[in-house]
Length: 132
Image (cartoon, rainbow, N blue to C red; front, side):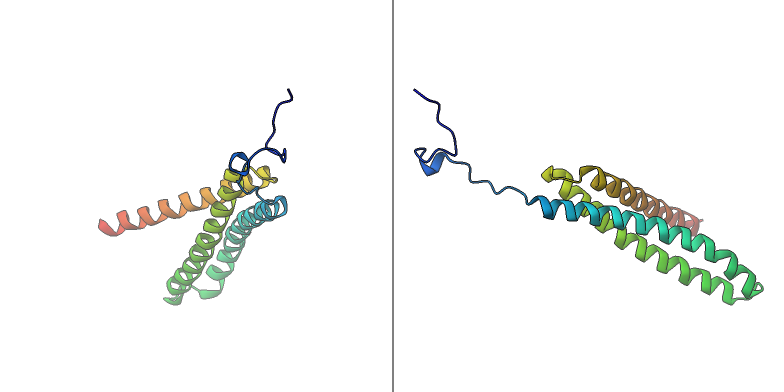
């Protein structure tokens, strides 16, 4: 007697596996999205650090400096938060599905998670400073 397999046409349909398999192309694309979003976070933070000395040197200590710095940091925070959420969400999807590109997804997840942790710490620091 030969063993029965799930792909055997003689096996009744209720015993065959009905779970859809993840598409390799879709998982690989999500892994790339996660990594690119994580790299965009790093690029945004480097760009802001390079622009800050230019802002300080052109405003001559006027009241506009504080407003300009607040706008720059707000824009950076919003963009980093959006990219971090994308990096974490797509990285988790790939890792949970165990699809191809897990290393890229893990790198994107790490960069996005680190950025989210930094944003939360910054918000907590601002709240504590405003309380005192």
